[in-house]
Amino acid sequence: MEDLAEFYSASARVMTRSLIRELLKLTRRANVISFAGGLPDPSTFPVDELKAITALILEREPHLALQYGPTEGDPRLREELVRWMAKDGIAATRDRVLITTGSQQGLDIIGRVFLDPGDVVVLERPSYMAALQVFRSYRVEMVGVPQDDDGLRPELLEETLAALARSGKRVKIIYVVPDFQNPSGVTLSEKRRQRVLDLAREYHTLVVEDSPYRELAFEGAPPPPLAALDGEGRVIYLSTFSKTLCPGLRIAWMAAGEDLIQQCVTAKQAMDLCCPAFTQAIAAEFCAQGHIYTRIPPITALYRRKRDVMLSALTREMPKGVTWTRPQGGLFLWVRLPEGMDTEQLLGPAVEEEGIAYVVGSGFHADGTGKNTMRLNFSYPSEENIEEGIRRLARLVKRRLPTLTPAP
Ligand SMILES: Cc1ncc(COP(=O)(O)O)c(C=O)c1O
Image 1 (spheres, rainbow, N blue to C red):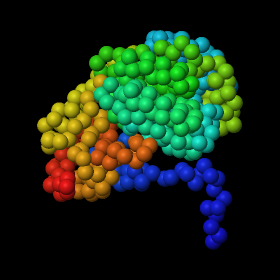
Image 2: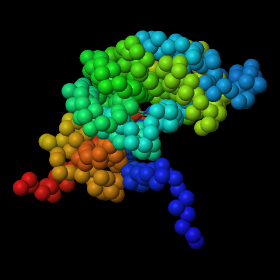
Image 3: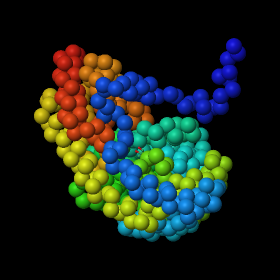
Image 4: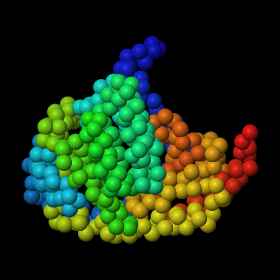
């Protein structure tokens, strides 16, 4: 058979299949306790409300819901989202909102509209793995800036931007996940948000603010979105109903200046013409009936409890030298094993010997560092499985610790 790989585009050639995803296939075995996914707890899905709303939509407006719709998205849904964002201080209008098939599509649209090969995207280290995949596919250079417990470190961001400017490189986008970040769980402080905006102005870049977890706040709301602090239309805001309603509807949106949104609409037209009118009508009705507003507190209460179970289990079980973040919201926390341990090497034994899974931390690093880190999800496993899974993880780490080669 002729080798057909020569037909692949340059972009396809740089889309490496992630080793981590391959390893994750192992975790689908029935007896594995998985901290690997980023899935909401399915008990939070509003099945009864969605049944009633689906029937209502099919009765009331099948001619709209089963038809093609505008690329920008259902105007009723966009109105609802304008109201939804206003509670966080984002002053959008319907014309400044584009509905997307998940925020993941929003990221890809941003790649198409703003990025040329060789451009630079500056992002947090670690950063959202699937954003790295998108940016990589547009053949840009990604430069990671370390974080601490208050998020991205602005003095290092400034150094990075200055160094890139000196070497004549064009930074187009600073990409941040400021609220309960995926993967680390940390939140960018308000002062730092302001500083990121100031630096974006000084170095003439856009800011992409990706905020799927903002609503899942366990200890009070996070600081205002960068999009609310931005006085210049420099921020492209991405949000989604995946973690607050359910991911299966694939309803998310971008908010930005009208001109930028229009350019994104043009790009989206070529991708899929429009998001499904049916799921948009359902989401719009779900908002109009007020469910989106009332359902968040029970979800956050559930995830807060699960986070607490995971934190106590880690404190109880983990040996000295292992550290982790204390997220104040979201779905994830971030574990650092002692230097010299390699979580990629550990994943095979974790699945085979202990029946547990996590995501290897290096996949969240644009430069492949972070070998001793891992991401743990606490929203999906049951409280019982969190306890048991952390016990097994700690047992494995303790077993492997003595095999570390002492530093010379
Ligand atoms: C930071 C971040 N951005 C975007 C997404 C994609 O979400 P969606 O389901 O809306 O495509 C996720 C999902 O986990 C995420 O963590």
